Length: 289
Ligand code: GUN
Image 1 (cartoon, helix red, strand yellow):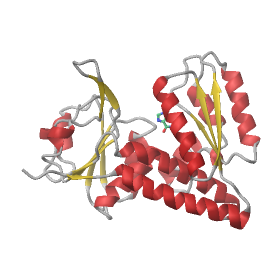
Image 2: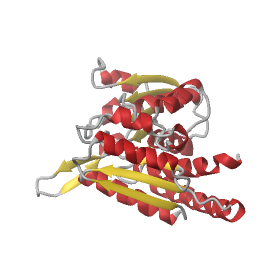
Image 3: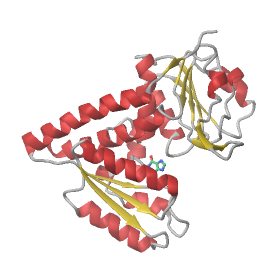
């Protein structure tokens, strides 16, 4: 039985990061601008702590300035808003990222709205969501942007494809659907309440799975030859007490039917950081472009 082509997100991300590092060097040498990224973490969620640490390491590796702010889990909204305002005013900081989720005493929407839209390297500010929707330039959310790069690595032109996005979050589902529309796909946004989800997914030439449920999308839901981009990162408890990371797609089943598929880990995950660095570089370049 033939198996789907593996889309190597790790390799593609490394290549992009190398190029971003070279462009960062040039920006420093030619214009004296060193891109700076501030990442704010509130609390000690273990997964978020790992993501934030990896973002800091990648930022420095690219030759950029990294500012990490770790605040206690009982931080008030007012204190967090004060820090965001301080980062908005700091000329060394070109990009600001507040790691989500935030503790329950903090209104995440209020915090995201407080970030200067031009420093919003997550692309989550309503102004940037509006820019994406209306086709104006601005920072685009990192994971969705990474999904498009991976899909185009196997098929340069996505025009006319039936794309089904499973998941409707502001972070992935909605923006990736908009980006696929910009690539001239016919886009369906499905979700956990969609009727007969299997038959909707079966129509798709391109599936973006972002529901957050382990191995939810089965092999027999997949159209033969389809391209599968799996955004899910779920920790599965095994019988021997160990854990394993799995995506939202039942990978072993899907790879026997799909034309191409991203693995978990090593697919979409590494692309998110590469896109974050790309957005930070773009923000730092803005005064000279
Ligand atoms: N938490 C999970 N993914 C993300 C992301 O892309 N950005 C931020 N800020 N928080 C997240």
